[in-house]
Image (cartoon, rainbow, N blue to C red; front, side):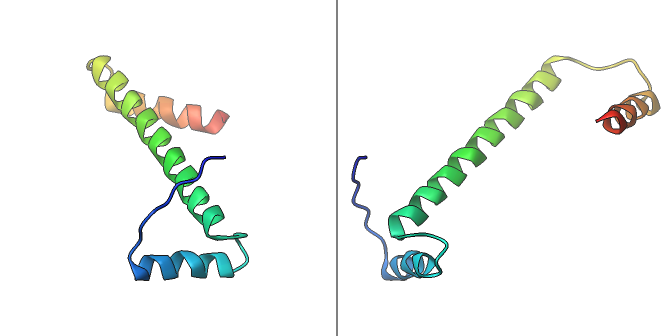
Length: 80
């Protein structure tokens, strides 16, 4: 595992250390790794959402009435 030194203002350092003291994390590094994993997960979900939006925009407009589209969405959500 690689080592990285990070400079933090005193308030942030105190916060990180306090999180480790709660017992949820074994140490400050464990807390920072958890933050990074969560940020990676968030970035992945955001990229997926952007892909879906782009895909939707590229698909063009539908000639179907909005009531038909909504009914289809409701039917799909009931079968899940």
